[in-house]
Image (cartoon, rainbow, N blue to C red; front, side, top):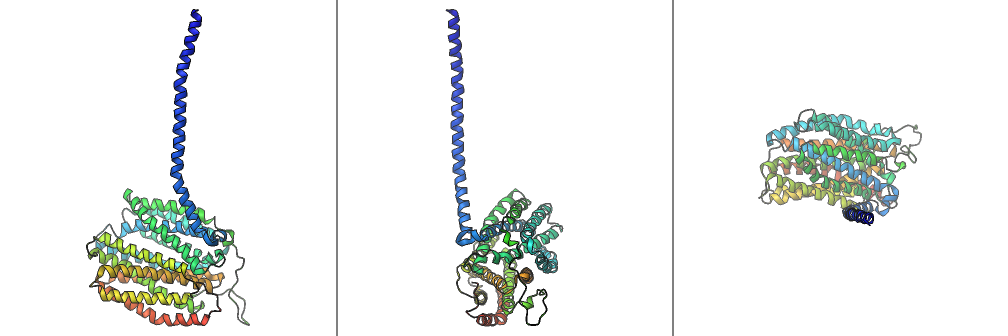
Length: 473
């Protein structure tokens, strides 16, 4: 009997050992299921957000035409640009006293923008020669900024002069992307979609991601001055990948044709130039140049003015933040209005917003001494709204009136004029004494001159086109 007792004891011992093992297995299984459930709960909001974003960007036929993918690409591009802007602002502007900051900003404008004036006109004709490589051109602009962001990360902490050539490269790459993006919008236009509406949706997506990227960049800056640039490198890498997801018709030359030839004129490639694009585009560009100069002026003049004379009850950072939010809100509102407008010629839109900007600026100059906080935020909001609507309408004019064979050249040249106008306005804002009434009076004078020389021409050109001409708004 003893051997049977030993066997029973061994079985009992084995059963005792197996119980805890099986119990541990069941516990591990329950823990695994709990982890999977928790993971699904965490992923569910992100998945729902992604589906919501995709529905918004692909609505009204934008998904079928390919415009939705361009909207998403531009959103990524805008986020990367904002991260670089945060890194540069913290180095060039916020890290030093006001007088030293004015010198740094002036140096930035001179070193970065002056070479840009020479390089930018080359971008358009160069891109016109590669009509089959538009996706590659946008991807190249993304990759170039990714590399330059890493290059700048070593210099951003010290603010050395080596930072400025890299900033110039970022600016040129950004404008190269911008002119190609503007030139391909007509190829991705959904059925019954106006050009102003399409441009508005693309721009609005960029504004939304810019607003989201700004606090992200500020948070990354807390980790170190180079971290926003590391983030920008990653974002632009994603943008380079997304560039090749655009439809192949972006690269196709099908449907492209040179400008119509007059009787007896020799067939040759038209020479792109701003004087050959028609009265509407010329007057629209002049009005946009004035509004862009106003934007540059307000950015730098108010930035330095509010550092020395904050708005009532606020510190300088809060004052600048309030004005930035007002300008961003106005910009977003202008873009949304552009998407909503129906059957309005872009010439009329530009004339109206230029007149509105003039009225708001004159009112701000008159009442600045009494209601500084109100007029400053209202002027920033109005400037953002008017600039957004005017730029959307100018893009529509170029897309409507300029042959596709040199449309990118027209966009590049117009961007050069607008960028230089912004620099001139910014330089004026840096040079003027920090006196609110004086600054707003000068801005009013500039807008009054622009309105006197362009509004009548814009309205006349709109009547000349007439209702029979296809509208783009």
